Image 1: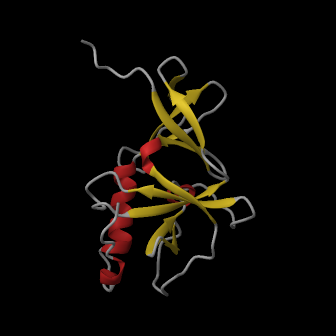
Image 2: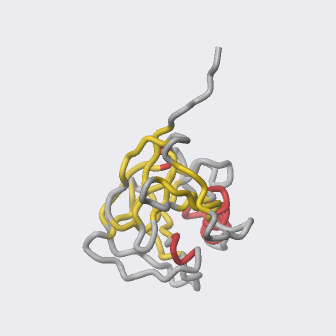
Length: 169
């Protein structure tokens, strides 16, 4: 019996300059943009602050800034997409990503996508590759790298005990 999966469900997540393609299970919720809380600590440009979600302080990042792309100020279409930490790095914690609008649900199969090799991404960077899907060129994020960066920036800093997220789904 062949148990191979020929089709997956994913989300096309709109950013300001690009789109991400991620498994549907990565996204917990999309919330409206709220002003982010900064704890007065020096942070890299890609780390934007914290947002309250389900009684948790969720760290919010800009994927575009993390990738060296220019980012914009939040506007009327800006949302925060809450990602489930899928690797063991975040140990069940969540993080938010600034997005522009709502993700689009789509079915992914080998007939509609191919590797787009025009852009080369660093092996240890937050993007694995870019693919071509009909007229779209979404980025495939390396969620483990992103989760590691969030872990190091937020949860491994002094005073981060208040950020321990317990009883997380």
